[in-house]
Length: 325
Image 1 (cartoon, rainbow, N blue to C red):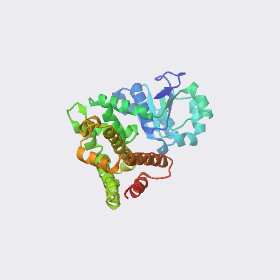
Image 2 (image 1 turned 90 degrees about the vertical axis):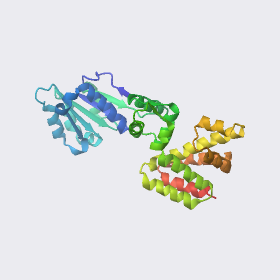
Image 3 (image 1 turned 180 degrees about the horizontal axis):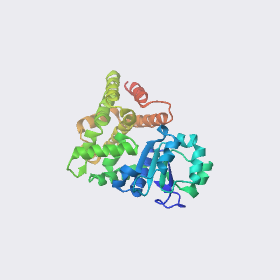
Image 4 (image 1 turned 135 degrees about the vertical axis):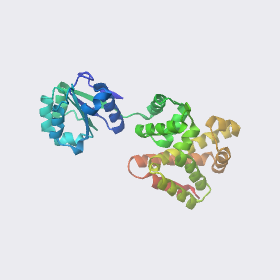
């Protein structure tokens, strides 16, 4: 995930630049480094954290050169430092040439262009650590491992379900695991049913109700249910498309298996369907072709949302109007 400039040892540099577009992953790597540099009892005296847009260069350099009593080092962490770097290139260049012997400067930025003078100076002054964005296929393993660190077991299917409901932001997924760990209390396993209850209340059950109303040609009811979802949960904007896609993929698989002659109870076991009567009733009402049409429409909506051509709410509203006929 993090690629380090090998020219410097990870805990011997006086300057570190963490560059990456995912703020959560960058912050995670910064925290890991701070924990290597300082012991827990040193944090209060030796660590100074600040938002880069709220401090001046003079304050930063003063902190770096002011060593706490009986301390060996002073660690200064500046988060979101892109503008700070752009606005203070000359003083930073001077500092890179002559850094404080007992100070450790940690900058987190979204990008670190290699053609700047600072970038060319950094290999001699410190360490560049590039933090790549997590790929979608890595997310399930990531949250399974995080759940394990919290003493909980999370199956691959449950992890995929959580990603469908909560989206692909690692920080949000970790927060949801924390909620689930508290919810299951002393239980060792986090199940798909619990994910639906805690994370997917609005995303799963309410989304299914919207789909049911839409396919029953009740557009006004479906639109009202959708509005309630958005009003009651601000995260719906980021999770509604995933919830719809999750339902339609399951319905498509279920419809295809029914066509092959499999029994509904066996399909329900394979797909872990709890609301069997509603699920199979909706499949029979829609049919395989129409379910496929909905999946293609959702894929198009995903592209439109990612390119700024639509919002998730307007996209689903248009889908309701289109299919509630």
